[in-house]
Length: 307
Image 1 (tube, rainbow, N blue to C red):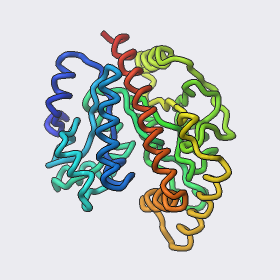
Image 2: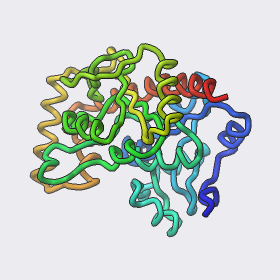
Image 3: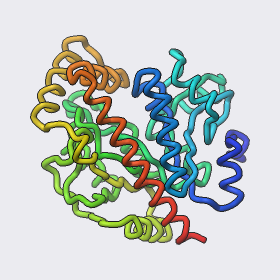
Image 4: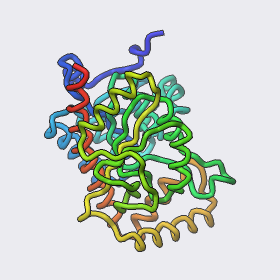
């Protein structure tokens, strides 16, 4: 069975692959489900340009016309930003969306699958999913974590979303053997804030160290991804007590409205945006752009090691 029959590349990505250029994967749920229009499309274009400006080629992924589309055109970005009937695609959804030729926006897990299938090892996102609060009774654990345990892609993020149980998320990643490398930090960043109470055992002050770690890991056939935890820039970080109070309020409302499963994260992020009067969206955009800079530089460094 040839997986290539299910993959199609944008012209920019196709040329980059032919020329052996560094490529950075990007998800599409941040466009379709993570931000309102028009900020979603504007942010997507700006993030793509940041990656180009730092020496790599962006590859936003999605499911279109029964294919894994690696790299989106301007028109396709616009379509995903405006459309209200785009499915949120994780591992379990990919085959069905391809078979039915429905539009699918890729989550962290699905983007990792698409990236590995396309021969791309570096992926930039905002924050990974994780173990939800109360998961000891609900078993609500993001598929992102299992994907990190088995798919050879490095994920540059601002930690896990702070609506989650960060302690259990770190425990789960440790069980799956996933390295979490703090980029210029010794503690896990918590998405909207630069710090959490959880120390990191792995630390790197430069992207070359991370690139060498990735090469050694995969050369040793140690399957699975790596989390590169890159804190939100100081000037865009939210006050820790303020955002934690907001999250508690949003969690309470979600529980009262019996919101569960994959609807929880979009609801909570929307409620947090409302309660912070848009400050959380501004922080989200800033941290994704910051991750794009680090991800592009890492892709350039990793690419140079594999020539």
